[in-house]
Length: 182
Picture 1 (tube, rainbow, N blue to C red):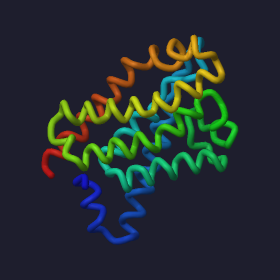
Picture 2 (picture 1 turned 90 degrees about the vertical axis):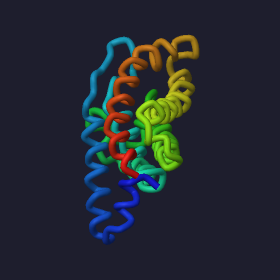
Picture 3 (picture 1 turned 30 degrees about the horizontal axis):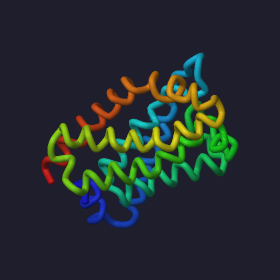
């Protein structure tokens, strides 16, 4: 269990709900950090940062629940995805695979932190890079359906590697000091 998840477990139901609502709003806010790229339907967003951070801090149970709630909110049409978008059509569009990948990525980040990967910066970063790779594992094949397998890496991976490394590093920088105290 992560230190934040353990702390949440000691709170009242109302306090837990309040903290989880704030976490959900943080993820929605991260999604609105969006930079469209002219050569790909996949924008640079803060969603991956939010997914990795919340999964790692909240653990596999709470982190996955928050990310799953976020995805479901978007599916039912609430404007929570990047660019204040939502709806089932977004899930069936070129970026839908990445959105689906957020849920297992949050689970993996939380699970690895619960296994103690957050006790060193290098392991925390490795855990978050693994979780980020899960997002790509879901997103790239789905994107290839729209742009062709020959263009999927150029449009859905290569332009994002450095930014995702920076986002994972930032999230690990937040997680590591928190997990070290556990």
